[in-house]
Amino acid sequence: MNIYIDNRQDRVKLDREIHEVVERALRETLLLERGSLDYEVSVSFVGDGEIRELNRDYRGMDKATDVLSFPLEEDFMESTPLLGDIVISAERALKQAKEYNHSFIREVAYLTVHSALHLLGYDHMEDDERRRMRSKEKEIMGRLNIFRDRREG
View 1 (cartoon, helix red, strand yellow):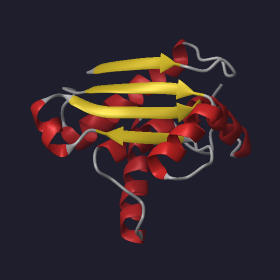
View 2 (cartoon, one colour; view 1 turned 30 degrees about the vertical axis):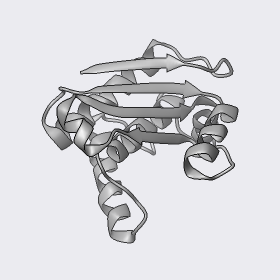
View 3 (cartoon, helix red, strand yellow; view 1 turned 45 degrees about the vertical axis):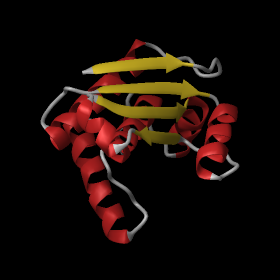
View 4 (tube, one colour; view 1 turned 180 degrees about the vertical axis):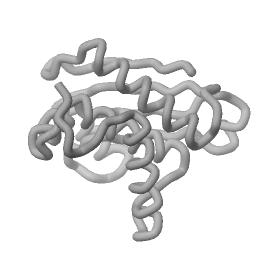
């Protein structure tokens, strides 16, 4: 498994533990869903301004969001281990961690799992899709031993 982590923001400090939780979250998601780690994923941490621009340019929504997923095309994915790109707003993740009263590490883990599932084809537009995706998220977070009601670090 190759993970490329890029920090393009300077408002939120990202330490080694953040990199480790991103790697663990991707590992568990890939093992559960594909049974293989033979993939490459890039994860970029950005500020609210950059994620707002991306959200506007690619989704037509002119507002900041917490995470965006950019999966590669299906036919391309079959010929290469590249899975896609995950973009996380570090600012938004920190705000949400405080809002939900859990750690920044837990929030980054959840956003990574959520986005990785999008890269693998999951969605949450319809109720049945949302239930299926939420169930997978809970299962993976449980495998990571990171739970919503527990405050880590």
